[in-house]
Length: 275
Length: 177
Image (cartoon, rainbow over all chains, first blue to last red; front, side, top):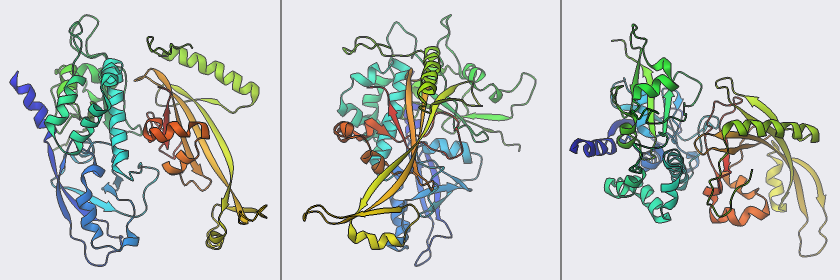
């Protein structure tokens, strides 16, 4: 289907219009104007906000500038979560642009990992890819690749180069012809309302009878509260990349087409808006 | 558990066996007073091994920094001053610092192996930086660490709901080769 390749591009080029405002208690030499930016859904905050940092540093004294961190309505934003996931989880049903507050002081050690350089992001990104391949292929595909192929995945993400990234990533999306899909599906389910960071379990894309498991099957198995009872109202939304896929969608297809560059399906369960 | 070094056999440990081995491990630890305990997470049925360890380190401070440190006594306890034994050494001041390590061994269903997580912080709760952790790795591992620091010890958020409230693990050392 020609449509399938379009989905890959739509996912890659998804953007969120964002307004960055400096936290009022930061000490500045003159007033800080907000900074507007289109954030790539598939990337990470600390990878794409150099311009934001430079913009606010211009109005601050050098000694007031420490490691940058971001917050939305009082919640520190975990840079190691993809941007699209953060938005879907915390702000998807609010008006655009997404308003993020920028901080340079009082780094919340208990909530956020430090990110002193791009190496930190690369290490995290590659660790996720490796874990995804451990689930999909017992790490065979990722281990057979050369270091330069790993590097190409990272460079493709960093430089927003779809073709460069997918030249290598397509290998991570293949499976042996005798199988109908991956060994297990790499996914994580997030709910802002629970203490637990996320749910991640072993889940096969194909049933023992050879049928394709669906998104609904996955949710029933690992997060049954997300699915409405037969007679009840659907109180939650199941969101990936800002859309609600049909629960009948085969999870194998979702994994191949709607994973983030780290090869994981990051799924948000959020309250359905009442109006 | 044996593992073929030629890499022909996959090195995996099934989760039930992991739990069995943990039980035996805890018994051994109790016999020798080594401090490992089994904890369960209230969210899941799963459990993990846990141990807390305090390390006391003597750190020498170059004499010219001594004046600065006098204003900043949050951490340090001055213990003694040593006379230099030869002219090439300058008389130094030593301070004792205490670091709290918390280790957890969890089962990773993704990799099907146990994974060691640890968190290191000073007594006031300030976590060690990654640099400080890398520096504190035993000398025999330093060569490997320098080759690929990010493959050896990495920064990670926890897989499970936390055991206590203080949050994120400083690092993960993966059992995977």
